Image: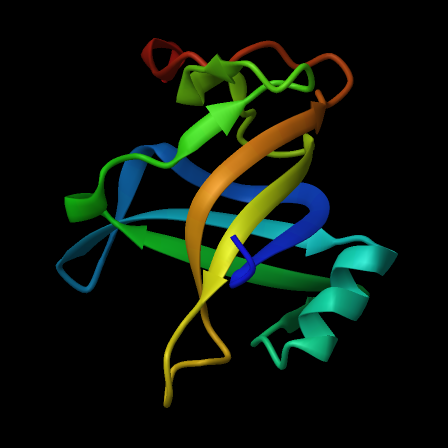
Amino acid sequence: MSNYIPLTGETVFNKVGTPDNFKGQNKYTLTIALDKDGKKLAEKNGLATKEYEGKTQLTSKRKVDFGQPKVYNSDKEEVDATHLSLFGDKVTMLVKKGKEPYDNYTYLERIRVEEKADGVSDYDPAEF
């Protein structure tokens, strides 16, 4: 587990329940606005981040071929991916750093929802 990095922050963009299709490729994607500790860890590891509205964001992806990343609740019990809200949840995502020359990108392994966003219940795709 030593080559995994735990990044903490708030969910900004969640495509873990259903994969994101970008330029013909399907991938599970999670973007979080890093908190202070997450930002330090990302900088220390030389990870690619972007600034948006004064917040440092990091996007991690996972190929559909590897299966959906596991999602856990704050009690560390595995739950369905719908437990992760579309945005606003405080999470810890466990990522793996890419290999050279892609070592500033991350691959999504697991997600733990530390705290649900206020007023948000589990995501139900049937609502759209």
